[in-house]
Amino acid sequence: MILSGHKKYRLWLILIIAGLLIAFFLFIKNRFFERSQTAAESKICNHLLHLRRPNWNGYAKLNRGLGGLLKNWDGVSTKSQAKNDGDNSFIQTELDRQISEIKRISEIEQSLKLSEVNETIQDYAAKRRSFFDAEFQKKFLGMKAKVQFDFARKKVETAEQLHNFENSLLSEQRLDLVNLQLELAISDLKKGRQQTSSYRKKIQAKITAIKLEIARKVAAKKELLNNQLVAYQRQENEEIQQQLDNLRLKFDQQLENDLAAFKANLIHNYDEWHQNQTEEFEKAIGDRQQQKKN
Image: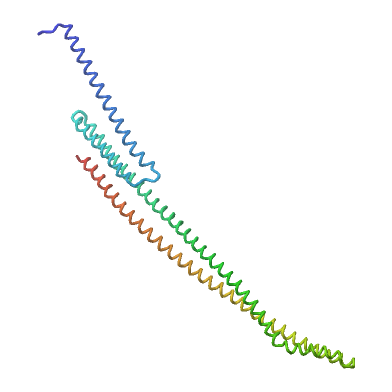
């Protein structure tokens, strides 16, 4: 059936409008797809770069995220390659950019991981050092209290010993002193003042001599006991200081051993993590280099 000119005009008009609508729809779809892909990639990268303390799986997340984008881009490129070879150039450029980004993120994570390892070691060292310092202070105060108690007890014993020594001397001379005191009393009954006065002086001199001798011996004993007390205190302090030095050496050695063991464990964990990261890194780079060839 032959269409009239008016109907042909309407048909062509409808086809043109339909073509414009389809082209506009495809344009909007492609623009939306590109924005969505760019936003998704930006979200992944920003999430990794702004982590203060990453849990060290950010690199794997980045790789999975970029891998998903590559699949989408690959699908779009395959469909549109016949229409526009520029898409392939875009994918090649994007692959190069992803390789650089993966390297950058990998280096950032490695730097952050090492920083965390060092910070963890420092925190552990500070806590262990604080623990051993507290233990040392506790031992020091205990030893100091014991030394003070022992010295106070020793002073009491020294005072008692000196008192007993003096009493012993008085006991030994008590009979002589009593006899002299008795003679002194009897002399008052004797006749002759001059003879009595001279006799009393002799008796009094003997009594004074005995008391002075006792005082001299007591003073000598006191000096001896005081010297022994000082020597005892000095020896106690030296022994305590030696014990404290040995304790400090023991704690320092224990701290060094603890730090070495803790550090070795962290380094071991870091080496395992670094090996896994390197393998993932090399695989991710290899996958993208292979896609560039394809």
